[in-house]
Image (cartoon, rainbow, N blue to C red; front, side, top):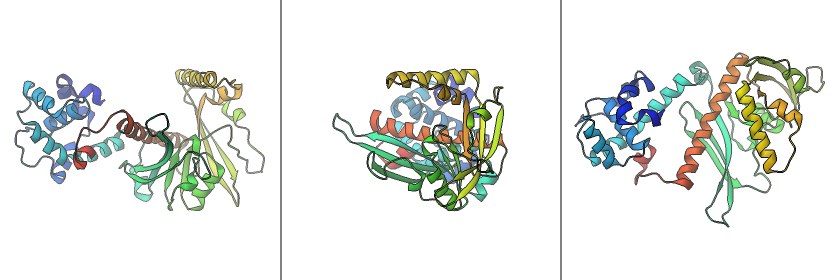
Length: 336
């Protein structure tokens, strides 16, 4: 969206409909638009910030383009000062966009904290550089990091696990399949919080209310139509207790299935492995497990889509740390 809406030719048409309707209401509180000094409207300021940040133009090139487009005539220093004051305004716009475009329920956020947890590997530059694992947690809808931990990639306690995360009551923890372990889920459940995690079919072991181990594939094969939902009540057996949850699934589109199969085949070819038929079957579905009792199957699966926000965070962090740098010299404009 930023790439398409940030050029002088297109921004005038797109800025209003791409951003929240009441986006200017936070301007007075943030101080971003006090004493206009050359800016006719919040739109002009937002367009220039997008040119500078999203398109990568320098401050000087941004003000020249703005002058040629008859937006305003200001100096690059004036734009830098305005950018520094826009941090809280831009954060408010991002939060409002998240609320409008993601399956985010405000009433649930009032009663609980929603956190997205994931890990990533970072490597110091050079052939002999060491690797580190980062466990990272952000809250919704603010996208603020509330916890991170850096550990080695080998050795005891270095693997991906929810047990390393401080958890409070009434929280909802979103995580990918790497955190789908009974021990980690039990840890969160024992602390009075809920889990919404992508299922790893190869290691996920669940039981019926009668104590029989559940076979996933026969249940998943009942979902024959694209977008068809399925839900089953299951029991997980932890180290010291047994607890119930919901197994929710949806069948992917044919295009998504083909893409998933291609990824599996590329990985198998790279590692000189043979992909098992069951693995290709599981790739036809999105399967999640949750201890949360509220919400329909569709709402649970929509909520899991919010986890993608942390992937975007990692993409920004890695690109800034290894592939480029923040083109600023102070913390305020860098955060903005």
